[in-house]
Every structure is written in C-alpha cells, then in structure tokens.
Image 1 (tube, rainbow, N blue to C red):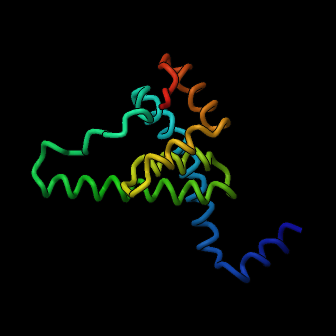
Image 2: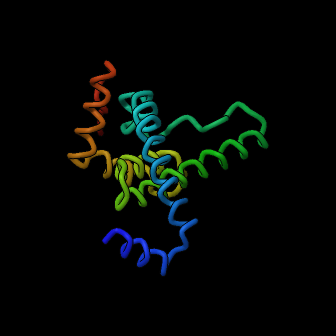
Length: 141
C-alpha cells in the first residue's frame, strides 16, 4: 500500500522534490519549536497595546536600516509561508504565521496582529508559554 502511495506521489512530484519537502518540513518544525518561544517570550507585555513600535535600526545609517528592514521582512515572509505550509504539515502553523506577521511591515498590520493574538487558542498558548518563562501575559487595548 505504501509503495502504491509513493508511486502516486511520484507521478505528480519527483522523488528529489518530495524528499526535499519532507526535509524542509522537519527542519521548519524543529526551527519553529525553538524560534517561536524565544521570540514571543522576549516581546514586552504591552507589545499589542503600543501602536508606535520603535523603528528597526532607527539610529543607523540609511543603507544599514534598509538592509535590516529588508532582512526582517524576508524573515517574516519565510515564517509566514512556513506557517501556511504547517497548516497541512506537522508544526505550529498559526503561531508560525503570527510570528511571520510580527516581522513583516504592511498597512493594517497592527489590526491583524491583534485579531490573531486575541484568538482564544493562540492567546492561551502564548500566555501559557510566557507564564512558564516567568513573563507576564500580553496586555490588550
């Protein structure tokens, strides 16, 4: 039965791509298990109340600021895409998507962040994680 499944998959996707996707899935799963808690614990409790976050690299040269912002947005896009993939693959899809959104700059970002973080399952998971780390829960407006 497994052989017929593998043959069916190989008619649509080559073995190399299939193995690569499995490898990426494992890497992303382990990476997000480490990165998500580390980042969410370091955010201040009033992060979602403060509409005017400090700009990244504000005190640096314009070129450094642009490169930093570009890197931050690319990293956010990677997390967002990985989170979308984790909706069907193993991993913390919603939390990974939230982390990606936290990094990306776009109009309406704060409203979307607040809507996601207020989802009962997400806020419960994040605040439980923060409690284990001895951090206060997130505050909302």
